[in-house]
Length: 229
Image 1 (cartoon, rainbow, N blue to C red):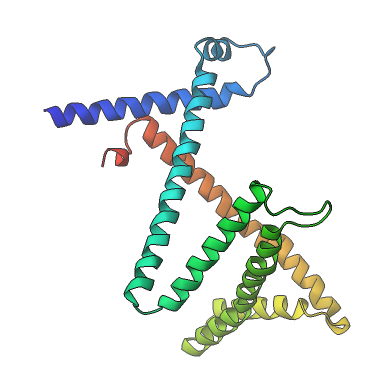
Image 2 (image 1 turned 60 degrees about the vertical axis):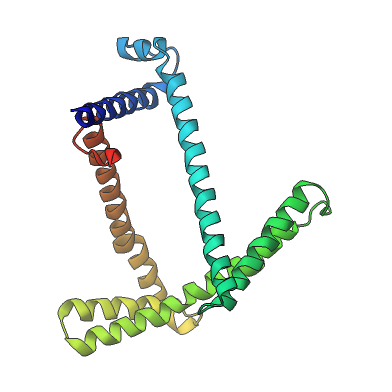
């Protein structure tokens, strides 16, 4: 009986806070001279201020969660290095990189490591030189992944969808080549990226938005009770 009361209380708190945040976000950004009974009631009851407070608490909670995740990651790599388990050298590189970035950031914040006006800071140089270069190299590997996937797909079974995928991939890759002889393919590539790819991306975003709305409505009406587990 006590467990059921606690579950009902958790559901009531979730529905109440969710409704307050929903109303605060809907009517909090509207102009002050807007007419309407419901917006005036929402502002008069202080829902907007309470919504801002709840959002700030959410941001703080997410930040603490990120810090806990970083600490857990550091401890996992530290344990791998101390135990000399497989891949401990890469864990050592990750730990040293972590300490280097933290040290550079703290030194810049404490004005120990200064930067001349108009020049980039050491942390930004490290980010743009290492991080972006690694991301670009990983993005370049996408070419080989696509070619290998198309070859496996056509080798396993030749279908119209497989032929369409392979042809579209070849058109996009050939159109990206910096050659004057593929000017027509470059136009086809731009059309593919602007029309079918953009339409697919927008469809995925619409699906994510609809799923988010459905999940929020289920929480508001008390159907989704995963927060109690």
